[in-house]
Length: 158
Ligand SMILES: [Fe+2]
Image 1 (cartoon, rainbow, N blue to C red):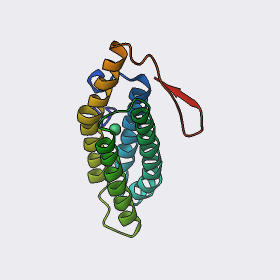
Image 2: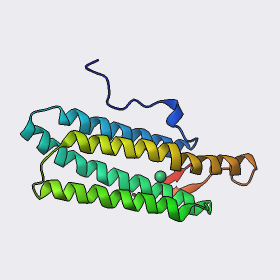
Image 3: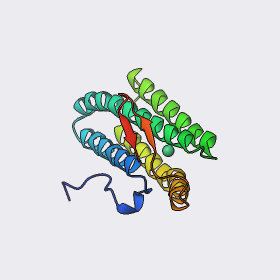
């Protein structure tokens, strides 16, 4: 189908924390936007990609910061390894973007597929585990809600 998205959100991706789920949906939207941009001609796709990938990297970093604040807020035991995965991914993403800018042969599809696969695997394995931990805390009555500061210092609750 021509109007089908590259990644479709399915409820199974939900980790049970509405704030994180809504940010994950936005990551899926950004990935779809990047993919659509890749369908144009070579030069056009390259310009669009370089513009949009910055938006994607910024949002990925904002989202990771949100998760890290939540993990710190609930004293999550796997905080360091989870944060380490975020840091490694951002490092790879930034290095890829820089090599494109430095003139590396442009294969946008590969980059978008990499972004999609990493995000979906990370959600399914690592974020789900965090979601289960927080759901369990709530079930045990040890956590009712949490509030953290967002990037613009707005209150984010879950
Ligand atoms: Fe994460």
